[in-house]
Length: 97
Image (tube, rainbow, N blue to C red):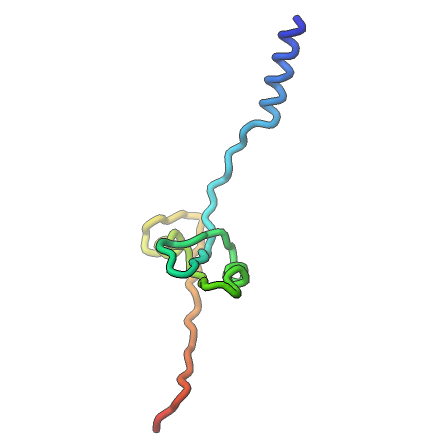
């Protein structure tokens, strides 16, 4: 009887903690370091978070390909709103008239 009670308590304890599944999540921005191939490390919700992590390193941030291709119909998730990055205006140093 004692063994059965201990086994039941052990089973209940294991069930209480459980293994828990990690929620699959696609972050909007990816950090690409140096000459790294592929999308990079996609752990950033905002561009500012990504740029803060890239600061002082040979790295840059880009939109996660899952979000970039969503507007083309590939990898589309109905609950995801795709935000296009703003165009950066570049000013020329020398103006010739």
